[in-house]
Length: 157
Image 1 (cartoon, rainbow, N blue to C red):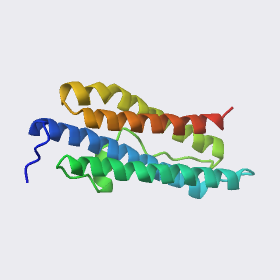
Image 2 (cartoon, rainbow, N blue to C red):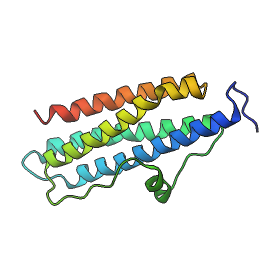
Image 3 (cartoon, rainbow, N blue to C red):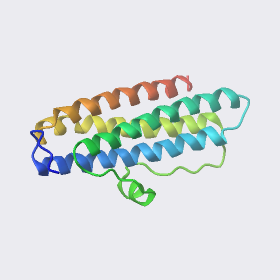
Image 4 (tube, helix red, strand yellow):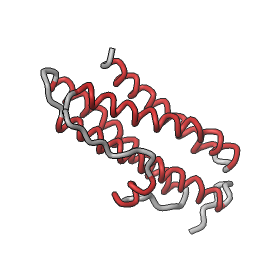
């Protein structure tokens, strides 16, 4: 059924594509955070294990909201690992040492990449594609990632 919400079909497709890129980034970040949760070692293991769990749970919520936003706009959410790896701005991290500082630095870099990408595209959603709703939505996601990045950064002081 045709979506009639005041946004041109071509713009809906472009917004959905941009959101699928974000969805891919979120999935890769989720896997990175799960990796940290499962594999962190050291004297701070328990606190970091719990901390990373809180973070991946937040990312799960973000993933669901991004996918639902795509569906709200009448398009399909990417749902394969191969598709995510083609679309993402992030890379899968490998490491020799599973210490909390290394994981935190890596996760922080991924959050900051997502924050920059979101910030660079906020205006495009509203001005170019006439979708103020998605612009507001990604502004909220950017703020969530900024807070998560702050929490990670605080561990490095």
